[in-house]
Each structure stands twice: as structure tokens, then as C-alpha cells.
Amino acid sequence: FRADLCFDALEALDDEEHDATTSDCLPLHEVKAFETVDLPEEYKHRGAQIPDIHMRAISIQQLVQLGLFVMRVLKKRVSEKRYIFDSRTSRVITWCIVNLYHITDLFVVPLTRRFRCSFVELVAKGPQAAKWFVSHWW
Image (cartoon, rainbow, N blue to C red; front, side, top):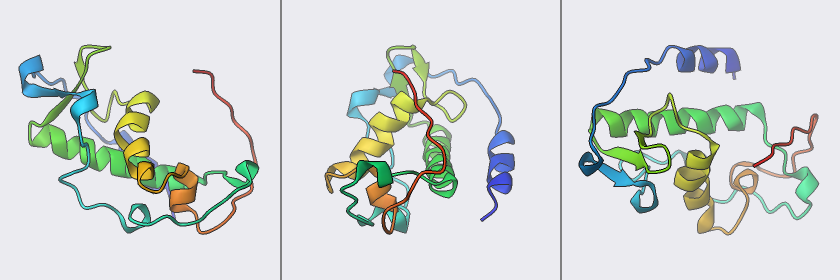
């Protein structure tokens, strides 16, 4: 696995503007974002049950794979003019403006809902200890 190659591919994406009107777009809450894209194998089955929350660390590889999946889905939706509209920002959601709120609503929750698990439990084969801890504030 070469994370640097993945990030080079992500940086090469264009930041084009889209002239979609709201009538061309689906509101965020009505979207099944990845319905027209083949689901990667690692998202089809729950990988592990990890009862110890502190052992649910995500690896860089797992994070990059999610990013590549999000990128592929959003680029395909834009190319097919099947836009997703964010009413909070009044913008079409593209790879260049997608944020963690969008990724959670459009990808993480739908992928994990049927298994009632965390995202790491979906993709991990077992417990994953953290080397670093990074927190965020909503």
C-alpha cells in the first residue's frame, strides 16, 4: 500500500464549478449516494466485533480507501449529472467540497446501519490499537 500515490491522485482532481440548479439536485436526506457504484468488498460484510472502544483505531490505509470510494462515487454522480445538493451551503456536493458531515451522512451511516456497528468494525479484521490519538470538535 502506497498512501503517497493515493494522495497524489486525489490532488490531481480538478476543482470545476457546476452550474446545477436546485431542481437538478437531490437534497442530502433523500440520497442513496453509492447506489450506482460497485460496493468494495470490505464494505459488504462486518469485519469484526470490537467491544473495547479504545481498540477501534482507524488505519491510514482504511481512511484512504474510504476517501477513494467517496471520490469515485461523487465524481460519477457529477459526471452523470445526478447531483447531491447541500441546503446548508446551497452548493452541489463534489469531491472538492465534501466534508466530514457529508461523508458521515452519505457514506458512514448507510454503510454501518445494517450491521449496527462502527465504521472500524466494518472494515477491520480485529482490534486495532491506536499509535496516536487525534480528537475533533463538532
